[in-house]
Length: 112
Length: 113
Image: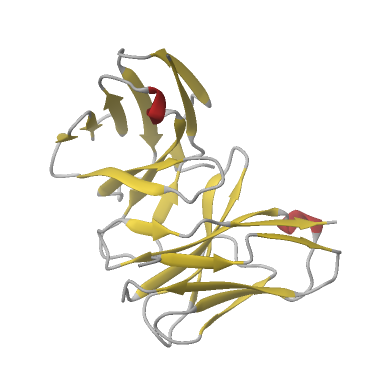
């Protein structure tokens, strides 16, 4: 039982390149989230999906797009990477409001 | 302006002693609070939570205290163990609101053997 799986774990991009971060969960949870973690900033919500077929912007959505492919998978796309998007990205899932989140191991992205 | 603050970036405690991690919030709409622990190169894991209808919740060595009037919560770890060395994130949320979960910047705890 893997829980929440993120791929890749590490990535280096050049400015302007695009990439997709993948997230899959086998917990049968409805809600999925993408966060970024930066030093001194905590985790900030980029996008979330309350249920299959819906996505909504979080606190810092600019420069990102998401796709809720099915109940298991929620991907995050950077269309044109910028150095400001250098960060550690975490995918998370929760069963429902008022319950704890389960996080993936993270993707460390560096944009040069 | 940060809605959830953890004013101590780091904390060092001797093994066996009490660790107290503090968290302050500004939004009075928050009604559910969680603590997460994070080891290097891993994702955060849930530790303990508390609803605003309570002022204390205990789980083994971990206790969270909530002071709503002061908009302050604290996590007590007794006794502290070297395996508790990690970054601790405080998070605040509004129940029934999927996106209103705000994390603090984290406190790095070092428990010295």
